[in-house]
Structure formats: C-alpha cells, structure tokens
Length: 119
Image (cartoon, rainbow, N blue to C red):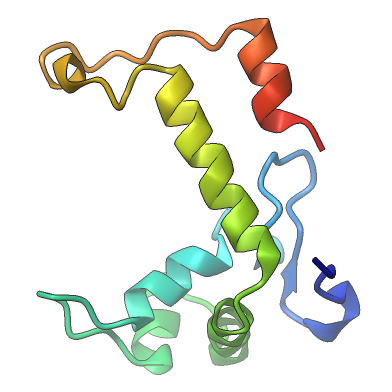
C-alpha cells in the first residue's frame, strides 16, 4: 500500500506522538475521520454540509473540505487505524458479551501493546 503524500494537504497532518496513522486538522485534536463522519449520511442521520461542520467545529471551511476529500480517497491509514482499534477492543475484553455488565476494559498486556502498536 502506498503512503498518502503528506505535502498534498495544507490543513491536515499526522498528529505527533499519536498511535493513529490517519491525518488530523493541524493544531487540533480533530481527526479527519471525525469530520467526515459528520458529513456522511446515515440511517437516521442526514449528514451535514462542509459549511455546517466548519461552523460547528470553528474550523476553516478549507480544512473541512480537505478532511472530507482525504477520507473519500480511502487512504490505507484509515483501515490500519480501524484494525488497531478493533485489536484494542478485543484485547481489552470490550467485545465480550459480559462487558455490558461491567464496562471496564482490562489493561493491555505488554505483548498485546507491542503487537497492536507495532509499526
């Protein structure tokens, strides 16, 4: 899989120190995927325009449009992050049916941590 060219995005960048590979709006803790999820229609969600999202998050409209375009390009980083989150949930016991009764994830073992976050 090819890397997304980092110079292509004016308002997006990797978040230093983060385990996530996807891009974030520069200078914020807002992942591009979060903005995109507000934009996409769902079963009971009409989706929002880029303008509405920009206003709600107090971001430049260009940053929101870039985030939407980045996610629509289906970068491998989004898939990697989803696999990582799935692995954390599995290792933490959050997929166990009894988790609903006692919603406290178990700590990740050193082995799980290394396996999940290896790059």
